[in-house]
View 1 (tube, rainbow over the protein chains, first blue to last red):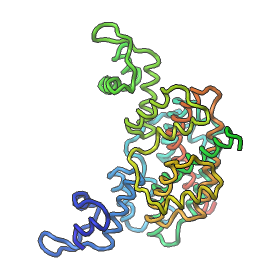
View 2 (view 1 turned 90 degrees about the vertical axis):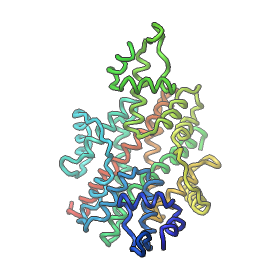
View 3 (view 1 turned 30 degrees about the vertical axis):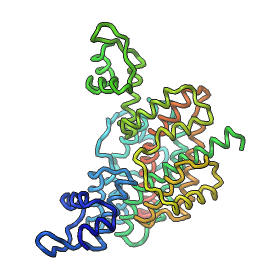
View 4 (view 1 turned 90 degrees about the horizontal axis):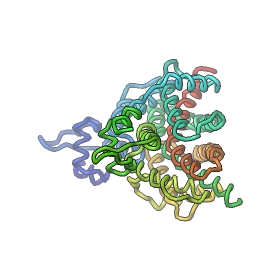
Length: 204
Length: 204
């Protein structure tokens, strides 16, 4: 199909498609004439993936690029699938690391018995997020944090069970699934909060 | 203190502070001369809250405005605290509602026995997020969704237990806490995924 058909098939403007091509988020089509190329089903799928990551996942095009680079890279060892996904998704904006809160986060993780890579950026990131939370409002005390961590363990167990035996598919699932399901989990939390509020205050 | 001192106290540039004042995110100071005002501890706290919501919560200034408007509004009935928080945080970008997926989301919620407001925008939003997830990768099947919902119920129960008896404080906790702890929960999920991967593939 031509670019205009790829546009109507995906609902993405030709201007945006040309931008994706220029930025190499989308691979080139098969040249037909000097100015026209032919696009196929793989292009349709790639454009839909880009839109899902941007529209539903809320990623910037810079983050989309890192996710796509991870997906396009040669086979990643299986135990490293989620690490690759996480690396692609790590906030590019950075955060203010606070050594005291990094230590608290590391102590908490050690207390849970979680096995984490040495020097993982997620540890200072968790510290900075906890600092912001505790300093802004009276939330994130030890008991709440343990209950959240219990829930996170359940989510992670469900996540790992969704990975298929096909490595390429599993990487896609890990990366794309994590981005998009973060949003699903946020919405489920809001709905469950509403339900819990109804139970507590309306007399269930 | 003067604006320059408010700037050094909070680490936010005077240009940004002037922008917050112009946009009424930050209330005016006490006028001292025709061109100078005096700012107090409440201003320091408000500026820190704005930065926490932007830097740690990832909110746009438009979302920050809605959150602050909710916090500044007269007392909200207790059972409506989280509803007000949720309204302030609902994605302004909108989403493509798909009636079929809205029905699936509503059926899922009904199946859980969750009590949700009629016509709540979270239902079509969940539908759109599930659609994006299922269409992009093979994740979000019925069993996974139930396990995520179990975890969401645990998180919500912990969330409600953090609300204090002071209504004004509780609203702040509900709104700010939800924004900032979304990020904490995302990070805990990534850490728990790493731990689970280590358990499954490295032989725990």
